Length: 388
Image 1 (tube, helix red, strand yellow):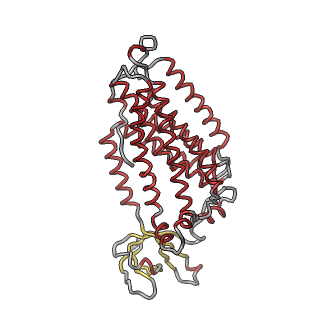
Image 2 (cartoon, one colour):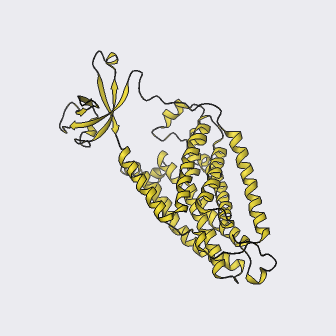
Image 3 (cartoon, rainbow, N blue to C red):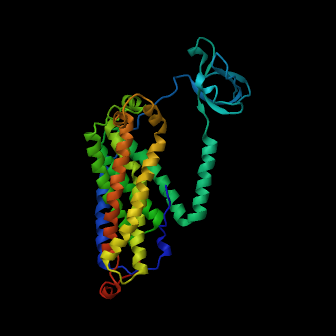
């Protein structure tokens, strides 16, 4: 995602009237109450179903590849277990050209009683944890070094988001709770935490939060309409049938709907923070400018933001679905049939809904910011307050 300057602390202090504070924090308090009530009402009551991936008596083990023969007709490799003993591992032929000596792999070892007296080792996947952990640590250190306290807030917010989705959103969807309500409550709760953690408590941040909540509501309603109008079923994904079997109460279309809303959350937050900060900065640099002038100036920034963010969203989804797009593009179907086919249609709708939501959020946030930012210098004498 492209970067933006959101640093409220770097801008000159701008006095804010009491009326603006009352309006903003009153609306946010109402939204917070509705979100809290939604969390209580939708909170999952049971335990999340557990997908058992290993049969009884089988165990997962880490092994190190010691010999790979790409020309092997038996589709087996030799690996070394934790005790240093050689093990013959059965593997799909397509992996023979991928694995190399020294690779660490995850192996499913079947008990001899299950295979007629001989222990059987089956390749499951490569172990990717260490390099992924290294990249995560590098990212965390860079964020802290460059963004400092704001970076720390952003990292804490990211952790809260992951925990929130795993503890609330996933179990609630698995129990068949209304998907639109789950999506909106999840998104609103996360935005309350994320924005204030990353950007601090101020009227500027609160204005961005109002715009974000408005954009979320529009995105959620549009996603609910779009998934029904385009007859998206959620059955196109390779894990759909497994999910239906494991959580029969879950609506696959509802899971898809919730995913569409959550997918647009990050970019929506990005544009609203930028728009609110742009209006506040213009007020600090031009104390005599009228509110309409601030709105027009903010929208000039917003139009550039829309132009760049829309194709950013599109490329993000394009990259994620590229293998699928390649397969469909090489088929003998027409372009229209390709774009409206199962999984491709899901990505197209996801992109369209997310883009419409962020485009609507930009003028909404800009208008709210222009209305709530302190008035021109000549009008501040009756509405002076404390700095934001």
